[in-house]
Image (cartoon, rainbow, N blue to C red):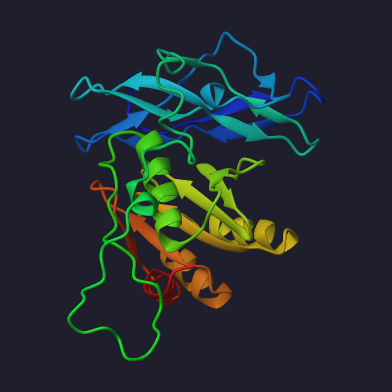
Length: 256
């Protein structure tokens, strides 16, 4: 399986228009890129309804042999149809693991535990609620990245974290009351367009937004996020989000 991304023509079955699609590649836990291979002999299908398992494909890394689950490639046509593109060499996730990727279902210890407040010297002035240290999951697949971001949002204080109703231009969308988040597990640094699309979607829903990227951000994306006050976080392979800009540092410090 090749590791280099390529652009291929995709014809929409609804309007018959053709668009170029750049096949994404993702970062395996061993550090090697894993590229999806589209099936040239199969037609794309329109996404009528979403099921979590259908949004993921299991692929084996050509360098270390480790299996990982990555976002199934999709393309939005200008006619309004969301296209799911067929891939080769991949399988659907096993049904034995449905609870792992669901943002509400991972094993979120942070909310269930409250560290005891030291008794000898109580705070003289009421302060922000104490949060226990953030505990995440090591990132080996894109599912792990989504789980880590969901756990972090819950640690910040956002309840009812779930998958967003609409899939973003890249990566996976998460949502909570008053918040939209985007998790990008690809090896390509997030671009300005990615940040702007998230911000515009959040604006239409009167919500705040936050971006998580595994590969970092282009300079233009960071500048645009500063201008729009979009918090940017970098996900390292330990699963701990690191603030990239001032908006993210402020969010990390104060919580939701």
